[in-house]
Length: 157
Image (cartoon, rainbow, N blue to C red; front, side, top):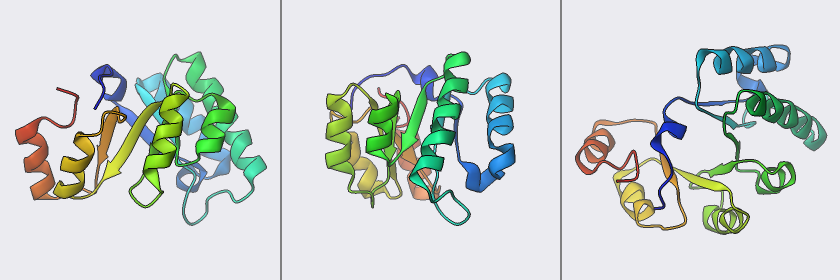
């Protein structure tokens, strides 16, 4: 794994309109920025998420502008093309999102790269990947928490 400043990931918010509702998405993000989040990931997935690519890009652009105003890194979840179009700061992908090709492309374009892990085996494999900047770990379970604590994988040591 590469080294990025751990402070970037200190208070990392992941959300989209499916979590807040369309009308409350930007006010919620701005309230979080005012409260001191250090990184934001735009994750528009699942039930009640926006379906139109144009709407997704519209809200992503607005979120990115807010993040720039507050000087907070802006990451996109899974949507490599959108991350490149917007020149996002980073791309986060999940294990089922065909991650390695996306991560390699994102890295070639200078984006911070992160990957979700859900098991100790995934953490061990991913921690050895030089193109990753960080791992997202969850949902939490005691074996993962113990592995993370014992090996200090949460931040690039």
